[in-house]
Structure formats: structure tokens, C-alpha cells
Amino acid sequence: MFRVVALTAILLTSVAFAGDGANELALTGHVEGYLGSAKIAETGVWSGGGAARVNATFDKRWNGEGEIFFDRLFNDEGDLTAFGGAAHIYWRDPSAFAVGAFASINGLSGNGEHFANHFRVGPQFQVYSDSITFYGQAWYGLEQDVGGGDEMTEFGARALVRYYPTDNIRLDAELAYLDVNNSWIDAAGLIGGLQANYRFANNPWTVFGRFQIDHPMQDAEFVGDLHRFNVGLRYSFGSSSIKGEDRIGAAMEAPTRIIHFFAK
Image: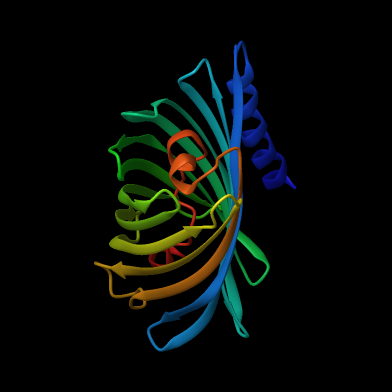
């Protein structure tokens, strides 16, 4: 219940802040879901999740965005689940760049047991050219065990390139680095992802496919690489193309997917 209340507050605070004193208020956003398979070492699991994001543009350039997200790895033997939300505040010129900050919270659970909460905060920016968006993001994070165990700190950075061959085709390439540690562990890892998106012309629906690999760089206690492949569907509102959604819509994202090498 606490998580539901906290996530609702994040979303409403973001949109309410955007509407305060605004002369013009434009709402855009999307809802998406995905499902696929994953492999950890020699173990195969299912992978699935989704997200909902709403962006409010106010005073022409300022934006407030709220999001909720859900990500899960599961098979017959159990599951690892993350469920959370984030708020973004940023200034954006759709013809040049955007700059701002975000804060997020998510709970971590396994086999129905809620065992940790994760908090992140950090700056982010985007730079626009005619056919490319470059997205940079960094954060400081803190994981707290529900049972009162050692806190785990996290430092991360993420770079994402979105390429638009046409207004309704988007190709993504991203790379993230994370370092996590507490009194008993010091680990680092890389996350790489490739994603293709196609939005139907004059239509709010986008289909996408994504491949992701999580690669632990330190600490032999953790299992090997995690490979994930998902296909998904996105419904958008307030924008007429996938490129337009990137420049005027809910284009910011908190780190939303489970990162397996720091999971308990």
C-alpha cells in the first residue's frame, strides 16, 4: 500500500507542478507493455513489464513528467520483480536541447516477498539534431533492505542515441555503467541495449523489439551475463509521430529495468 500511495503522489506532484501558473498546458504521453524471454547463464526465464508516462509542457519550455513502471523476470521456480515510479522536471527547446533532473523509487520483490526499496536521483539532458537525439543521464542510488540489512549505494551513468530514418521509425542504442557497493560487496557492470520502434502512420500505436545484455564486471558471487529479448506495443497520445513524441512528449525515462547483478 505504501508503494502505491508513493507512486501516485510522484505522478500527481509532477503534473500538478507543471500546471501551476501555466498559461498553456499541453499533455502528452504513452502506455506500453512488453514480453519476451531471457537467459541467465544456462537458465531460461520469461521477461515482461510495462510503463506509463505523462508529460505536461507549461510556460512554453518547462516540462513536468511522471511515470510508473513494472519489470519482471520469472519462470516456474520463482520471480524477481521491480515496481516503481519517477518524476522528471526539465527545460526543453524542441529544436535544440533539454536539461533537467529526475527522482525515482521502486520496490524489489521475489516470490511474493518484498525485500528492498531502491531510490535514485540525478541530472539528465538531451541534444537534438534533425535525425538524432542524444540522451545523457547520471544518478546516485540507494537500496534499503526491508529487513534492516546493510544499505547499498549505487552510482550510474547512461548514454542513449535515438536515430530517426523517418518520422515514424526510431532506432535506439544505449550503454549504461553502474557501480554498487556496501560493507560486503563492491560490484560494477555494463548494460547495453538495442531497440527498433515503428509507429503506424496517422495512428497512435507503435510496435517495438528490444535486445539487452547485462554484463557484471566484478565479483564472482554473481551469475553471468543476462540476455533479454522483448517485443512490445505502445499507445501514445498528444503526438502525431514517434519523432514528434521525442521532441514534445514524454521522452525522459528513469532506469526502469531490473539489474540482475545487484539483486539479492
